[in-house]
Image: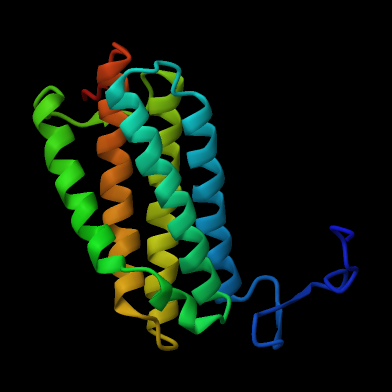
Amino acid sequence: MAIYTRTGDKGKTSLFSGKRVWKDNLRVETYGSLDEVNSIIGVSIANLKLSNKKIIHLKNLLIDIQRTLFYVNSYLAGLYDAIDSIDLNKKIEIFEKEIDEMTQKVPKLSNFILPGGGTAGANLQHARAVARRAERLIVKLSRRERVDERAIKYINRLSDFLFTASRFANFIEKKKERIWSR
């Protein structure tokens, strides 16, 4: 099967419904941003070099996020029952539990930090920033058409998780965070 179809050569793409929309359509832009997040998470996983239990656990969480983003993107692309194939509320609870556990292990945050540290930590901050953009886009989309609120909440919590995961990766890999100062 060829990767190219030539059906998008004039600037349109197909949703799962078969409906043709412009590639700059808000729905397409939203799931495109989440696809970027997914790719950046993949780079982050590749750059988590240590093989201790904590890093392996973090990698497994990130892989689960990648899989979940495929369901959310399928939903956003018009395969509306895809979101019911997973329990997003349970995944949000897992985010909150993991955020709380990682936060207890990293140094207390009393200042803003600059994205960076190690390669994996910097990539996770990059994923967080793109997730925030995706969140703004999904909210904008929800003001124009119906969007399942679980998807919005999941993406919101995802960016919180990615921020904390970045700090945790830097901490475990002994990479120094740079503090922002005026």
